[in-house]
Structure formats: C-alpha cells, structure tokens
Image 1 (spheres, rainbow, N blue to C red):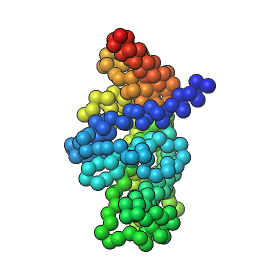
Image 2: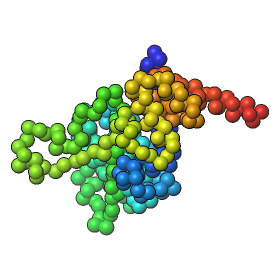
Image 3: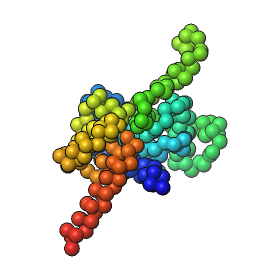
Image 4: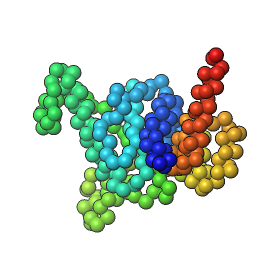
Length: 249
C-alpha cells in the first residue's frame, strides 16, 4: 500500500516542484541554451489548462508558455520505450489545439482536423512546441532519442531523406553532467544521483548540511524512485507547515 501511495503522489510532487518558474528557466537555459540566460523566470507562465494536449502513457507533464510565443513541455517518464513517437503524437494534438483556439477567437468551433485546417487564414500564426524529456528510470536510458533511431531496419539511403524528430533528453541520474544556477534544481539532481547509488548516509547528510527544501527532497526521491526519500520530503513539508502554524499563534 505504501508503494502505491508514493506512486500516486509522483504527479503531484512533479507539478509542485516545477511550478516555480526560476527552476524551470534554469533547466531550459542549461539543457537547451548551453547555460546562457536566454529564458528569464518572469517570461514564463503556466499553460491555462496545465497541458498542451492529452498526455499518452504513464507520463507527468508540465507546460510553460513564454512571452516570445513558444510553449515548453516538460515530460517526466520512467519507461523509455517509443518516446519519440509518443511525443510526436502529443505535439500533433498540441498544434491541433492551437488551431482550434485561433478559430474559437473568431467564433468558430470545429473539431474535425480537415475542417480546422481549411478554416485557418494565411496570417494565422502558431506557437512552436518544444519538448524536454526528463527520464528518471532506475537504469540508464536505452531507448531511441529520435524518430530515425526507431527504424534501424530502414536502408541508410531512405533514412537520409526520412523526416526526423529528436527529443531533448535529460537523465536525472546524470547530475555531474549538469551545472544549474538554481540551487533547488542542483540539490534535487545531486540528491537523486546519491539515491540512485543507494548512498543514503550521504543523502541525509546532504539534507542536513544544505538546507534543502521539502519539495526538493520529495522531487529527488521521485526522480530516483526512492520511497524513503520521498517520505522524508513529505514529512519535512508537514513539519514546516506545523511550525508555520505554531509560529503564527
């Protein structure tokens, strides 16, 4: 029962952690822009419904929009199978939804894709959807990172002209490869790496010495699928709430 409880709370933990725009911006700048300060936290806002489209499979998804007109979709997964194909499908639904929103702004409600596309005007503009995949499975990633990699049996001459779709992959277990300017993000990845190695003495020493936030500890536990670390984070959250209540009496 305990395992089921922590599993069902992963989505809640994931969304709570990434709610803070400074963490999300740091992830984008580190992974997509080589550490350059291209996306500022104040430029980000949550998607109105939290998701750009229906999320396939067992995935946790957070969607942020940015002022320049892009939509960043962060998808947390534990199973690497067929991810390029799944995200390509998700993006297609996202773009269809964008088209429908444009038409709704003109008082047109259409569901059929052919009707939606036929009703668009030349001056209508879509926002690009940019996906990031945060993989926190126990084993190193062994799946495809592009659509082409899913077709190894296709002759190279065909592959050269085959339209590709690549994913922006982040592995939670590779903390040493990332240098985030956001402390919470760096703490979460560092703790996750230690938990993956089952070095729990170092985990709890790190929690004690670095003033790690409760939601950060819980996210690190979710990254590493480590129940005790998740529970530690949730208990820290309860303690902080209790202290806050007492302090205001």
